[in-house]
Length: 240
Image (cartoon, rainbow, N blue to C red; front, side, top):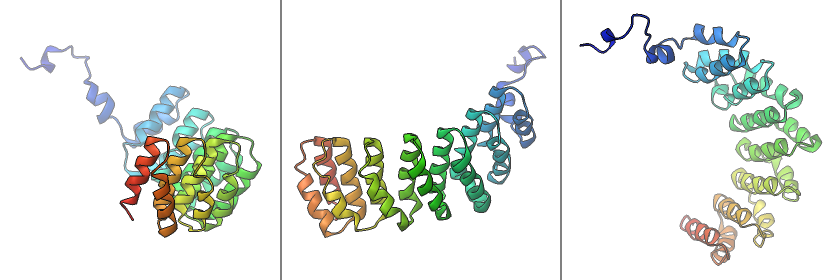
């Protein structure tokens, strides 16, 4: 007997509920719901739509009054934002500067870096220097490496002196990504940092930067007391 013939006539296959009904109209309807769960579901379903349509719908979700919905939506701009960089820049700058939720400001910073929207550098610098939220500062410093704007060098240099170890580690990684060779003498000062995770990131940054001076530092770090750090230094030297 056919499986579906044996089921009640009211039965609707799960795949139909979960996949066949996921259309732009279906998602639009969910985004208008008063139920937060349905609006969150809509944001997740936007990922299944074509990028052009998804970009249009995500803008509605980004304007949601609920923090969770807004955060889930704005986080998708790192991939959808390329559909229109000018609109994405306006949205992300607005939420970086004005959103009351630190997590959303942090997500906006992440996306600005991922999309390499260098026009936003002054805003990222302003918020870093004025906010008291460490998660926002961390996300800005982490984003500056991806952003690829050499104006960030001074800000990353100052972040190395942060009292927050996570921000310092993010600064090391971003200096490696930025590619400014002036970072090597700065990083050299931290080869004896007591945090092995810091030193591990330092090895990776030196590997990214390359050059003879970085190679000499890495050769010394193959003797690091932490096995993971010394092994990473040895692996990195194979790229020179």
